[in-house]
Image (cartoon, rainbow, N blue to C red; front, side, top):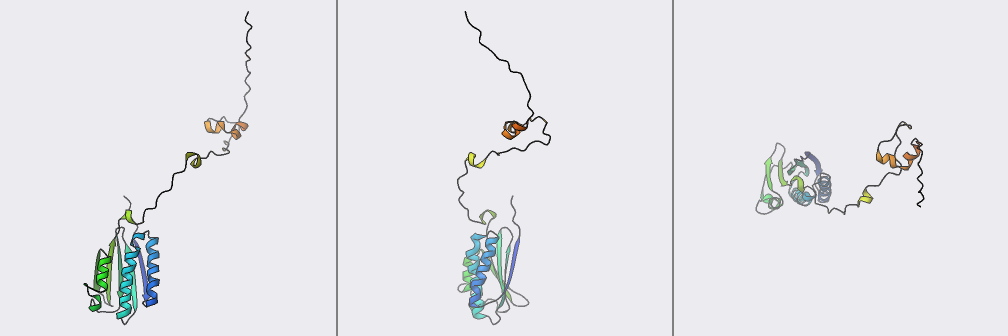
Length: 192
């Protein structure tokens, strides 16, 4: 069974309308680096929605975006320093939390000592991390397995070669000791 390596990313940003696009590109790059291409659009859209809401309604624009990947779920959290946990601009039936609910498998919010955190999660199985790429044709055997041009010679030049590949290589045959064996000449006998 393949197990995924847990990943974590943390980004502190002062939200402005220009920075929302930059944050989206940064998060998309990290998700692609983690081979979670399938989650780029929903996660980045969810973070964009939360950052636009913070830009429009918060007085303190300093926020933190965090992502955790545990091998099955990607949890994304956006925290700010406003203590107004879901008000009219966070209404679950309409507004940004309705969009977060539509983009995620689960979401929630909680108050912290310095503000609040809105989080959402997306599930991705290990096999679904990256889209499948069609495989090209396999190379033919003649392309994949090329015979070496020269086979290395054994350490002792005078030793006999027992490997059939080495024995048939031209470079090895030139270095083999030549044994002189008398040839027997066969002559046809005349028929009378």
